[in-house]
Image 1: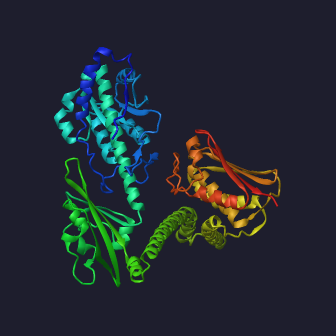
Image 2: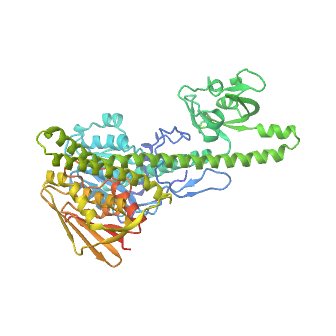
Length: 603
């Protein structure tokens, strides 16, 4: 691994200190010598870079060398200072203001308490170095942050330098043993030069770690993409740590906790070709690789149910710098087609065809797997939508039914009929909502057929408002409806437009504080019927506005009456409005309420 270049500004470190600085750099390098840089095939649980991590640019080296990955495409290194003393922040930034590493300067991020630090670190997972005070709002605030970084955020790459002015609160020996930190410094010991030394050592370790982690991930991706089965066995535990997709297909299963080198043949049903005997472990290339031997065999058969798969396998050991075996790597290839080709004197042609067919098959599996994931996601989204958009109508029906049960003897016939009629209307509304939910999928697949007709929007809006009398009464919210002309005719699907307006009115009530007003205006503008729903709620931030109409969106504003929200209602509204050639958007400023606008096309 190449050692990155280091530049220290000459106006902050004097020339006559260079020899001493070099000596201290060597000492600091030893502090990181125990980093586990020999792990090439860590298990999925051990790999710090998860599948949703941002992969960085890869430049493949020549001569089949492991790809070199530039781990730091950003223009600066992020350094987080966590200390409740503002002077510590100022002094640290001043001392390191001219510092560069790999031709990149530092960007400083500051937090003055443990609580503030948690939010800052969650927002900046790519921080390289953390200067962390121990004693802040609590005597062990800094130690709590260490656990939060390593255990909650699962960030094992950032280098943590613990700085304390009260060593009695955090004894060095105990802290180094009990907490995953990378350096321990007393504030009184951190001179300007030592601060430079500490920073260089920390960034060098971070650079090496991030490079190693991304190379490990890239290597795994390379092995996963290979058209033959690949299995990696760890020498220390004698257990498999990696099995790629092709191997899982051949074996009929993946990694299982009970599988070891001692039962590998039986665990994956490997028999001697042409017999019912287990394949001898001492002849299996994977096991021989653990003993430092390279080998290939083609007399293995894997038995899966009523299928027998002939296998060719080759194994090779992977050594560490002391020439000790750390891993055994073996490849497994289905040679069914090869055997058939050899029997028919056309081995070469058939083998090439088999490889091409296997490659196509793996691509098809990947495509089908992606389709299944998408279908499962859509199913989960659909269930969430049902729960969200049927809750309010069901609540209304429940209330009407309770009124009848509790006051049956006191109600007149006309009052009972009115409540029954409301229950009927609510049931119709729920039915239409379910239909609309099913229609969302049809919209996205291009299969939905609306029943477009000329509809007056004003009566629909009035009906929606009437359905929310109980909810507005409970929160003492007043709804004001204003429309300019007697007829506001739009070319829409009636039930769909009613569902859209219902959703927006429901949201306005849900997010409005008690004792407020909601203003609803309907009027014609250009070739649209313009509907405005303005509330006096908390309003929306710019960040909320950007993600307002997304799926499963969670906004900073919360319902004011304990109402439930799945974050799907506005996504449905947008899909349905646009499917009817309409427009929907929101105008809002934080603290000044929100106005949702829907424009339905005129005939």
